[in-house]
Length: 316
Ligand SMILES: NC(=O)C1=CN([C@@H]2O[C@H](COP(=O)(O)OP(=O)(O)OC[C@H]3O[C@@H](n4cnc5c(N)ncnc54)[C@H](O)[C@@H]3O)[C@@H](O)[C@H]2O)C=CC1
Ligand SMILES: O=C(CO)COP(=O)(O)O
Image 1 (cartoon, rainbow, N blue to C red):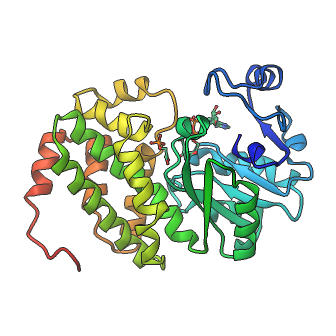
Image 2: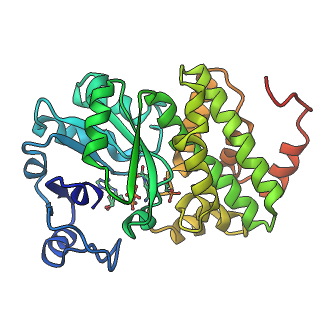
């Protein structure tokens, strides 16, 4: 919708024929975005070759853990000069790779042909065409500027950045922190607790970023603090809602059953912790989320353990 509103010709690929037909015949996607009118320049197809044909940008927005398998099928169909754009906010389980790294590896393209779009961009608010800012990151700045022009509309304001690592980490780790804040919400805890989790969550994201060569400024920007605030405060966030349900006492199975869409942090908390261990970075909040979500640790016990950690300086 954003690309179409910005004047691009867009071909969406979808795996379900009934969704593709609905988009083409009604110009809406009733299952996901009821009532949102898509621009006339947006069409849909179930044929990936048709979607890829002649694409200046190939925008990838499948759940992170499915990217490798999907892209392996699409890669041979892509134009040789297309720029691949990741909207995904996750880290691959097993490899601990960021989405742009998976793209480079599977599509066999250099980093200059891979870009990332990220920021405080809750889908339902964007679909309502409410004003929002965002970041388009690419190691090749002219490519970032081309993508910026392609998605700039009166309601969507993208800024360029060349720090791909920092932008991707900001997007993936904030989902883990949003789970923690949601859990606190579900436990009935107040704003001091939530602000403390968000701030210390950003501190551990920045520590990981420093170890991985990211620019510290990125975490104070839209891809870091901006997205963290939106996701941790909004009832529209799937990660925040997932955490709230856990904090209210629902089991993991009940919470998964109640979640219709992707809550990336549920899987990525494990791959972020894997990354932290590979880089020898202490990420106590991420570790706590893994313990609650995957090891069944009761949230109240987890919180007590977090608070009982040894006293530290704020900046290390
Ligand atoms: N929804 C949001 O507000 C935002 C989402 N994102 C990111 O975008 C990425 C995708 O998220 P959403 O679109 O919200 O998730 P979603 O769960 O709403 O939708 C993902 C789409 O992929 C399809 N899908 C699911 N499994 C698939 C598979 N194995 N192969 C092919 N297609 C599959 C689904 O049918 C659906 O159409 C995530 O990484 C998320 O973090 C980023 C910014 C905002
Ligand atoms: O990334 C998002 C907003 O920027 C969406 O967050 P959720 O995936 O938690 O809904």
